[in-house]
Image 1 (tube, helix red, strand yellow):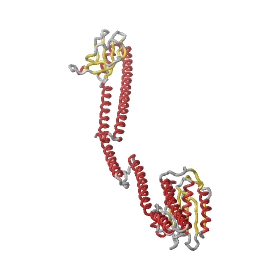
Image 2 (cartoon, one colour; image 1 turned 90 degrees about the vertical axis):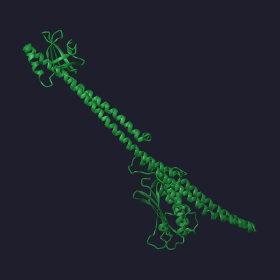
Image 3 (cartoon, rainbow, N blue to C red; image 1 turned 60 degrees about the vertical axis):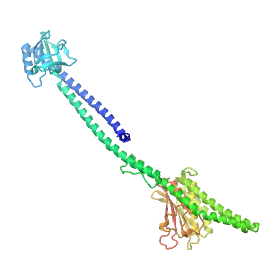
Image 4 (tube, helix red, strand yellow; image 1 turned 90 degrees about the horizontal axis):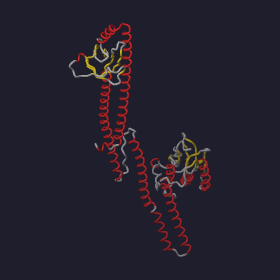
Length: 467
């Protein structure tokens, strides 16, 4: 129960119950007071009206008419209190056996209730409460007309009983709700704690449970699960990079060492040493480019872009990319075509988008070269169902359908591309840039009907509304 009381749901339920109980008590007491006041006012008006009628009867019919009227009215069910007393306060007639002393001393409405005893209750200790109006008749006698307060008192007792029953039912219901809600919350927290313990133990594939109700626990679990998925992806990328660095960079480093060793052991002239040093510098530059690409990918994935996001003209970026690489493509015997829509704006990083497009065009030139036939590269920019699509297509060998998800990973190079220069980081950088911009990459065959040289189309899809 201590743990149950510490839960937020139970505490909120307790606060809401207390607030509701206070409001209900105030409302009930307010309504009962208003109702009691209304009944008292109605009673006073009724007594005042009856007193006026009795005085009129006394004026017309005298004392005998007054006595007959009071006797008749005293026998009616629910009759008022009637007393005729002497100027000294001695009761001469009426339907009251005993009266609290001092009630007949003052003329007018009694400000406080008084006690009285009925005829049928002679010998009983029960005393009733009433309020009345005292009038002095022209002959000096005193007339009291009053009404019993049992009805308002009974109403007040019923209201209080109803309030107590309602509060009791609410209390029991609140305890049941506390227990059920608190117990459910504790169970969910225990499941979340268990999953958190397994995650902290190193199992990043674990996810926080969600009941599907869409409450605050589910929203918290979904947010944390998204974060865990991101962490798991980064962790897998780090492990993959570490493994790939150990395997893929071992070869160029070994080659670099062998060249240096060969130069030391076999060099005879300065020209030999110079040639060896040039080869070593070339290998070193390739390693530097590899590490620069890794650094850029890491910075992009970590959200540390070299410039902030701003509206950029994607049409200008696409035309600049085509203009920059067109001479290189022509030197390789390739034809470059483009279909670029005007005035397409997106919110992004101009430097990163330009570098990503350059990587795609460079890859297209590299793999389309020597493909035979009408080798060409096509750059297309337009809108597709509201989203912005920038694609680069080539007429090269393409990528098998089952390998397209693999080639986006770092250092992944298919066997068919081992003969081509590269590090296997180009598509990884493009994928990281698109993820940073809220978009994604799509890879498909440029010419699906062909058996060979199906080509590859890499499409950079920016989200709808990015402009």
